[in-house]
Length: 422
Image (cartoon, rainbow, N blue to C red):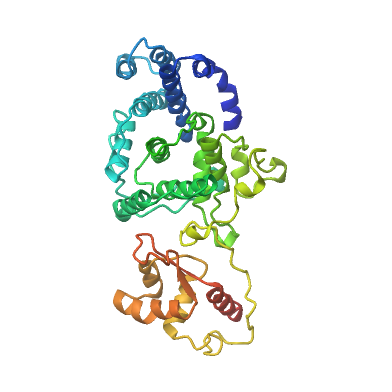
């Protein structure tokens, strides 16, 4: 049984929650919505809450107990148990996290800041992880089903605070004035995917990002149907993965289409089909393709990015050609003519970079240089001026995630060198 089948079978268990959403008073509906969101989000890590948690949730929804009472009951339930059932550790995590999330969602206060983001993680996983609210001290990789075992490249542990600060400050400065809903959704998808890609914690990054974004959307006036996170939390995570995955060798670039579909359903009530199998890299043909909502014309979820996002490292990039139109198989790799008169330093830069996007530190290591000032003056600057390389953030030279990639011209020279060597 795949995860989507599990969710369909599990829907009956939430029938009481749905009833509260349809016919109850506003404050009761809010509590039911918060619980559905909190319980559903556990699916991003393959966790499922216990029946005891669901019974406790219903008591809170009906007003019989407060959210603090519910939290105390759940904590007490696991403290007094002597007999442990299989997978109870996972259920305990899911139960405690769900009640913590429900409490967070019920509060009107919110801090859109780096401390606020870190505090969100601490409050969600308080009593669950010893490292709740602590930034990871090491670099991470994660094998992803949707990437067939490959991983997204996450931010280095040394850059976590600086990158978080940059992304949140830039979003705080951003003005939505004059944007239509389509442009707004594209921008939000870009911001959320960038924030998630930082992955500042050892565990619980997707759940933290989801709650932080839900609170942020509410704080700036959006009325989102947060129960979408309940039924499609795993899709949400996989969409974030696809929005941050690049593999030039395999012809794969970051794809925001799936995340945009999610946000269109969330914010404007569309009914775009959200199936995890559609996100799988090189999915079997018989698995089909996503169906666009009738309420949304085909052009409403663009496959290309607007000009304002072209500087982003996750922009919709054109896959570089496998072979160069100006390739010359007869020219030797070291020939000045073959390299258009470029210096040896620039040639080494091209060969070291290839189809990758590398930081200054990474390129210097690849070419065996240690003097950053000389590297920038005699290698990087000439490479940029000659048009063989471009920065991922051309308008923000000091961006904490700044990297450099080859242009079509640079790739042509790189491919030509490979051809001549063969």
